[in-house]
Amino acid sequence: MKDLKNSLYYINILRNFLNKMRGNSRNSNVRSDIYQPLMDDDDDDDNNNKPFDEPILKNVERETKISKFVYFMTYTIAIGGFMFGYDTGVISSAMLLLEKDFVMTALQKGFVVGATTFGAFIGGIGSGSFSDSSGRRITSIISSIIFIGGAIILAFASSYELLIIGRLIVGIAVGIASQGVPVYISEISPRFHRGHLVTINVLMCTGGQFFSYLIATLLVFPGGWRWMFGISGIPPAIQLICLFFVPESPRYLVLKEKNEQAKNVLSKIYPCANQNFLDEEIQVINETIATDHSGSYKQLIEHPNLRPLIICCGLQLFQQLSGFDTAMYYGATIMKMAGFSSIRDAIVFSIFVSCTNFFMTVIALLIIDKLGRRKILLYTIIGTVIGLIILGIGFMFITGLTVRQDQCVDYGINCGACVIDERCGFSIDEGTCVSRKQSFISADQFYNKCPNLDWKGSTFTLASLVFFVMAYALGLGHTPWTLQSELFPLNVRGRATGIATATNWITNLIVSITFLPLTEMITISGTFWMYSGFMVIGWIFVFNLVPETCGKSLEEIQGMFL
Image (cartoon, rainbow, N blue to C red; front, side, top):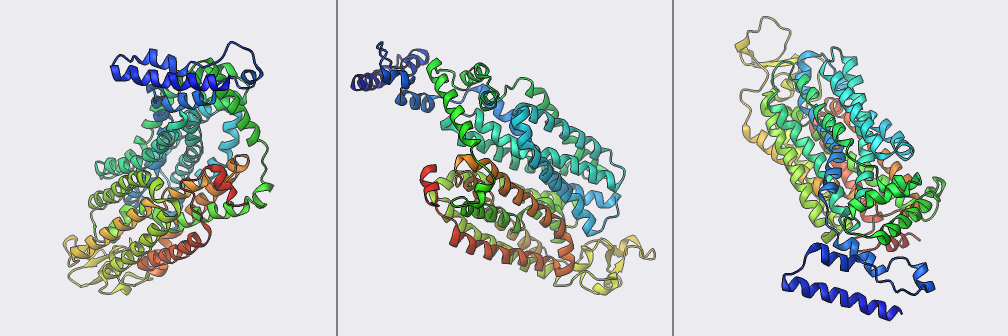
């Protein structure tokens, strides 16, 4: 009986091929042959135990195209990723304008930036369990509402405290989205297109960063930061409307024992599949849920899960210690430090950094399965070390190695270090650094830039920053997330990735808050050189602990740690 069924299967394949060659193939006819289960009329035990033939099951998954409805669901949910990127990038530009309306120390600026990261940590912790209890769709709806509320508070903020509250609220929405978006997309994706659809979220994130810089170039005027924050409420409002036309994910519906509703959604994901295929998918989802619920946090600190946990947490740690997010959070400020004193120029040149991140992320997604995770990390971390070192050298020629001084006059003739101190400006007549409060200095005598600054130094620094971002985006920017989804068995994967992601957020918070104070304590050059030292340690970590997983099945990967 099995031989007969297999023969019929291959005859079907041959017949469909010949139909296509003759040009008479209609999708509906061909697919009815491909997807019709080859069941014999006899009620033998083999058929009862196997309701859907394995080759046919794989063929359905492989032949299924991504429907417009699946794309609609994916892009609707991925607006959360877009907002993640937008709110990461917009603060870079807004900070230059906020300095005009709020008097803030370097640490206070760090808190404005870091409030979103702290909020994301809070939102990420609770969103997983809430998503399992209330649903992926409801979680996204709440995330959209929180995004809108945060945007309104920020747009009308009249005090430093309201800025912090608004950024914190937006951060909570970011944390919910960063956890919920990839989960929903992976659960509504046809199996053989899952990687492609999940990467849409990554591209939406980097696209959001790029869009924030483009918008900022149009809003460089007093109070323009209010518009930058206020506009961020439009995408989640669009998402909120679209979410009413998006169904729950099949996995959540099965989790809540709503199998018929789950089949209805699956029929839209696999529009050409028949009832037997849908029953098989429901069974697979049930088995996955049962396996997932068998794990515990205690198992993570036991063999064989401890080493993968150390690897994933370590990679997330070094991803943030590279200092890359400072280039996103403080990109315009860094450009201003590099000599681009005009706010508009600083933002425009920051677009180069954002563009580099976007396009190199696209390239990374194309080459990661060809070069391998371990190899690409080892090569690109060397690139980040080189980029950070030469970036520090570039700033050394612009600002010197002068730390923040108690008084402006103490900077003397060091114009580069003088003008990046918000208290100071450079007097061309006196040839020295002076306080902005000195009313006797006329407008034509006072400069917030260095009149004799060589453009080559600024260009070199910009090129160094772009090189660093290129190396980061090719490796550390995405590989930790890829490995995080591969190294753990299914029963502890959710808990393990939660811990690793929390490591990322905590380190992100520390780095974002301490960046500006560090530039004052050990200079901006010293700060980037410190990050390069962390990257050297990171390279040693990868060389000694991270295995190659490219080309291996999940079972083979997990067997490496036994």
